[in-house]
Length: 96
Image 1 (cartoon, rainbow, N blue to C red):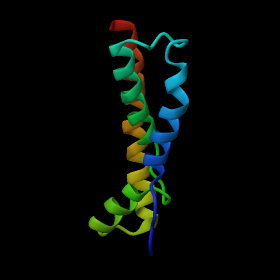
Image 2 (image 1 turned 45 degrees about the vertical axis):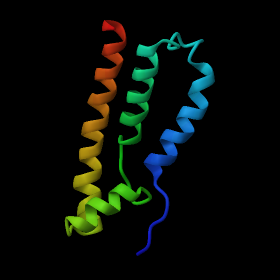
Image 3 (image 1 turned 120 degrees about the horizontal axis):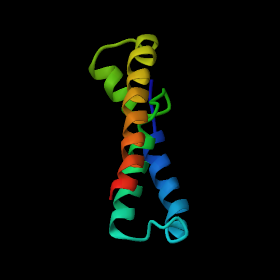
């Protein structure tokens, strides 16, 4: 099975090109705002890894896990990483 591209990479590039012009209206045009925006895009890109993501295949193939189990285990674990990461970044916005 041959995979091309990566959903995470496309998500980050697309989000950054959409968000950049809006940073001043979102009151994120400071150094801290840029950092929080980048962290949020990174956390959002790992929110749920699926078969159209190249990182999914790297983990699945190198771990010798079949696709069905990888969808259950790896994809759900990325959601458990992405959601708290987004919440922490959101809370950092109030602290910083």
